[in-house]
Image (cartoon, rainbow, N blue to C red; front, side, top):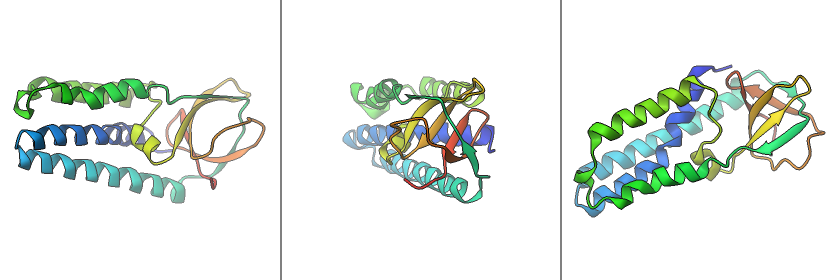
Length: 173
């Protein structure tokens, strides 16, 4: 289990696509250096996400996982889409109030990283991963991250436990 570190990585990589929006705003207002830094940061976050997934698939203990219920858990994407599009509503990159944005993003990351409210990473969604809230016969609900489209809950799958309540499907698609 990766515990809080996995949640921190999943949370930080979730904001990678929003950096492209900020980069576009910076580019359109001729802030080319800031646009380049934002694109490089986005690229670094995507790379971290891919390395984390690859490492998890190779190193996490594989355990059988049975579920009795499943429900899509990536409905929170509307909130992320709003976050992604918000910078487009400003007239220029320099008009963004970074003294407000940076602490707000840090607080958001801290709340998600220390709580159990994490359910969705749009970057993983763009890579073909799906998020499901799945219930077990013990009455525990987990967030399952998988590339499969769950159509039934009768099959047992192999997972690795990322955090206390987040499991990653380690089987093939």
